[in-house]
Image (cartoon, rainbow, N blue to C red):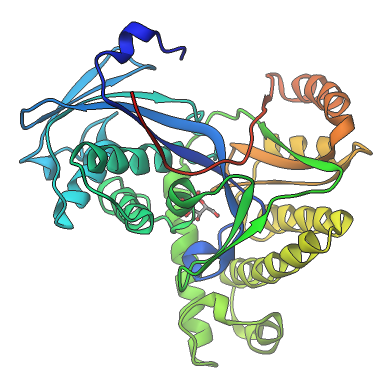
Length: 378
Ligand code: GLA
């Protein structure tokens, strides 16, 4: 939304948190694996001011609805359709001992909903950062991310890993994050792709059942973990190497075999991708993106026809070294590694063919890699 000057008079701060892409390392965060996300310039902006009451009044740029939360009853809003991410985030922040005061908050979310770019994490993280800012509190971004994840899991019912909230909070300008989800150790790596650029494309498939399918995958990996614990003293699937998998997996039944194979091989691809990127080996990095997509499609079963069509149209272009779905799956976005000078031609080739085959258009999102949380005094 374009924000008018007059509107800004009603608020004291603009606090924002980012959506994210994930270069590689999909469906491994909740298995203790390493992921490789980056915060993007599609953000959720919260315009906020303290209002001297014990009520949080919420408005949205995308909806006519207004919601009021009582700061003394923040645990009671799980049934809300729109503001439960806000309520859950405020609730767990308060539960952790932080001050949550009455506020007027206006949400302008520029992360497309249901796109696999983590609009919910951006909303959760920016809510906490906004509440901490008006309470005059300095906050630790990692604590914000962990609290936001708790809200998503325990308030909104998605048993997610830490990748999205961490990237949304802790992202850095032009950096990707090699985040170890077991230890939360994070190494920032230059997001430089030589003569290539990352193009983000939404297949625009209407979402359904993502949350239940996501929770199901997670449960399947937990079953597989119990199996491998009989063979090796491990805390998470990511503790296994590809060699371990080959040595021990023979008696593991489907679908657990395929799910575990994806997780363990994807962790290996993350490692190889970082090495390839740091050496400037873009062709190799592109191959790893393709292998990740194949595995998500054939072993983890979280892709869909629309996404597979999009990814194969991308990789059929000479200018594209690799492409894959990102995020939870079942629709949402893909990333493609495309020769920078060919990006327009690439879009002009992929867009009409996708629309012809699927019956509706894909969306391309131009954006940059930026800082996660930002706060500005208005
Ligand atoms: C969603 C979850 C993340 C992660 C990805 C898949 O985005 O919120 O924690 O599991 O799916 O990599």
